[in-house]
Image (cartoon, rainbow, N blue to C red; front, side):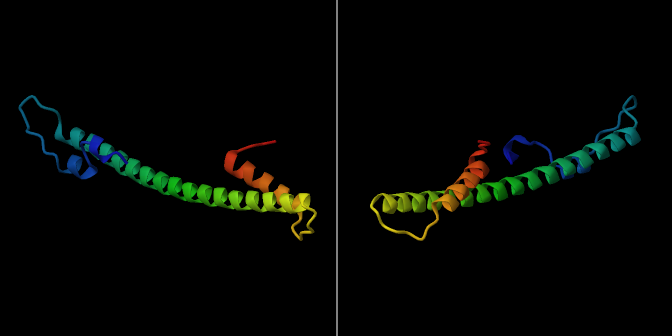
Length: 112
């Protein structure tokens, strides 16, 4: 969160006292409006924290999927190399290709 750009907190607004002038605003109306602002600030903070947590979770999931994709891609390359060399392998290429395709869709958003 960009805390350095936010000048007020909900607590700052709550604690703010205005000088009352003879021709000033009605204190009850100002307090009511400031209470609404405090509620909004509190809600904004809650939303931002929740979204930051979700971003972190999605970033971690994305990293794990990319790692799994790399592992499967490597296994596929080894299997193809063994197949080209005439070696018999227990790795099922069709299964690997299917898993890689699913991972590509999940990681890169491909809908091929």
